[in-house]
Length: 196
Image 1: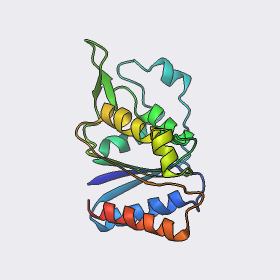
Image 2 (image 1 turned 180 degrees about the vertical axis):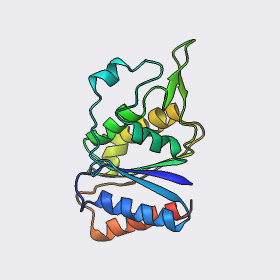
Image 3 (image 1 turned 60 degrees about the horizontal axis):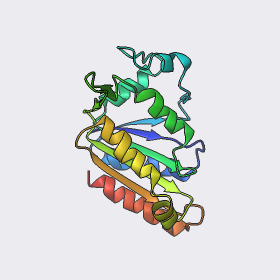
Image 4 (image 1 turned 30 degrees about the horizontal axis):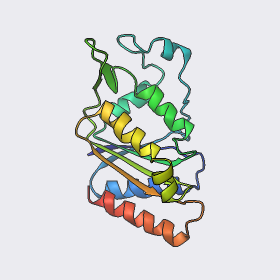
């Protein structure tokens, strides 16, 4: 399987970078092709330009500002996102990745008869998120309703692909977790990826 592994963290010595590195090594060892898209290190601009917004419903949509990323997304069989959750949401750079690369004609199209969204990323069969939260599990799930999972599964994944293998592996309470807890999470992620 060809996996687009998207990393969204500004610090090169972060836990997210360690997760992405381990994920790539595990996937390659399992025979998969991995295309690492490190949004910060590649200098991705998350800002939707005025021209991109004005042309949002143009046919075809102008992808010239993100053509390379769109090509990488369209060449993938699987998408794995590695990111921290900040304020119960995506880092701005990852939100910008969705805003700019998951555009009409690429990730979805509008049904002319009723405006319904029709998935177009049918090449993507696997959609996983490897993430962390600073808050404990109960705050993310019980108090906040796990907004990132809902956005990914019910919104982005459902609107862009069909019959996806969706999975989210999260290390909660990252600000207080021990080294042993971080290693245990890495082992859990490694085992899940090795089973692909």
